[in-house]
Length: 404
Image (cartoon, rainbow, N blue to C red; front, side, top):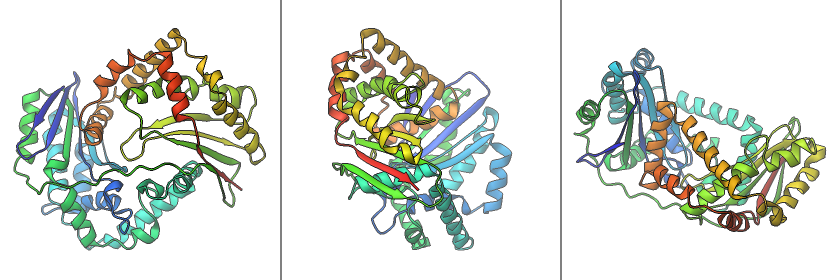
């Protein structure tokens, strides 16, 4: 991988791939974590409004150009970042990159169509809440934390969304969409010099003030069980969360190794105990959200209303009987887990667009590329490291039940 630090503060990451396509991702540390308490959902609204027109292109011209040039393109707002990405034929990379440079550098945020876009976002929010697993997670985070931004969903609530004005949007854009807060990743069959020339052509004259970013706020979770009733829901959803914001890099890697056996796949401990042995859930799994500002370990399952207590009893017994978990990690188990982590990562970034997104978001969140560092740490993890992380993380969960 090659790294270009542009004079205006933009960091560009380049990776060569021998094929016929080019993917790129333009990202900013301008996600929901950057919002104030009075403007929840603003980062996501800015992402939508970026595409509403520029000084030279109307919204319809933008949409037509994107459809003509890109095989795939999209944008996304998360808590720590907002990203804009797409894939073109390498011969069309400059055309596609010019379109995105225009969208990002020259938005006009028109009043025309603004209220309709807010309606669309509110409809997106309603669809978000129709997803019962998502609703369960939102309730989990709301009950777990009092001060953190993640206690309200990324796109805000309808009341806060409808308060957002064009002036709010312009202010947020001007504050956070600046060169020193921008990372661009390109994975391409084009050579480095060609990509460098194209990126600098469209971004080198961009200027802006140095952004003063908010620090991520972490806090201890409120432990205990919380229940939310929802009319019409079939069955029940259960989620556990454990904060991991105080883990160092090695501890996070140890947790990943532990989770390959604990909650990933049909041979995992959770799957075996809950589904195979007791038939209590179709799907059960655990996962790590290590994004800056989030940093949680989560257990997730769906079951019938009548089996909620039984399923939770099994999970709680697993969490409290740490000795049972300690004894499953032989040296051979750890080697297999490391191989599984490496394989899943390679499968994930096999698509050039996924590698672009990973490179950009890792740089935004951590200020460095941690992939190579993780590969080194993986080789140093032993059973004792995993036992320590089990005892450190799997305590005092917040538990959310969503049921009828």
